[in-house]
Image (tube, rainbow, N blue to C red; front, side, top):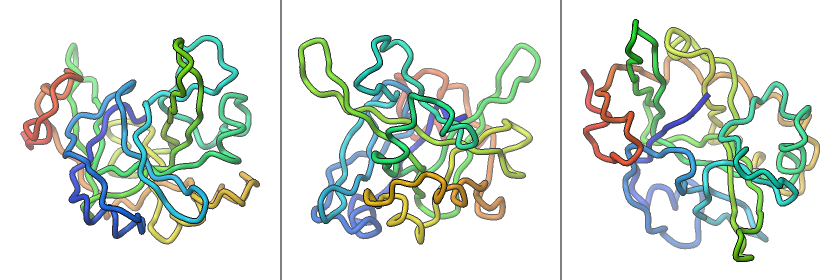
Amino acid sequence: MCGRFTLIIAPEALAKVFNLQEVPEIEHRYNIAPSQTVAAIRHIGDHNELVFLKWGLIPSWLEDHSHAPINARSETILDKQIFRHAIKYNRCIIPASGFYEWLPQGDHKQPYYIRMNSSFVGFAGLWETTKADDGTDVVTCCVLTTIANEVVKPIHDRMPVILHSDDYSFWLNRNMHDPHELLGLYKPYPSDLMVAYKVPDLVNNARFDSASCIVQM
């Protein structure tokens, strides 16, 4: 699964990679948690845009908003009603510099930071729009997951679906509505492009967002 991640990137680099029309205003984030807002890339009309979405997917028809999945298993995504519309029509890319997982060690769960060799990558994501109690639109999202690679496997059996840059346009193509054509993208990210190390328990507090979260122990 993916329950926390980071985004530590210069806005200019983000705009260049995703061909954004404007340089976005974003800050470094070291402890992005469920229900918080996350930066995401969508293709609207004839261009890409960066938007801020609430992490936890809520389709418009879902009455129980307490059930807002933050992850979607890529292997079973077509079997779950909650994801069927989004995987066909509402795909997004969630930029990230790394993510956290926890390894049980006796009574303690040791947090690990798993980062990529590049400054950032794109998680495969889905988005949906629903209505808040006051009638305003709320746009939500989730992250697709796949089996862990050799770096992540000793810590957790799941990891985010990390897209290669050559696949960004294909994933964002809103004219492509056959989810079976996406199956080849759900492979684990190459192990030789990632590293994992222990970090302090500071990350356990979702309200704590500081570079101290990713300091290697």
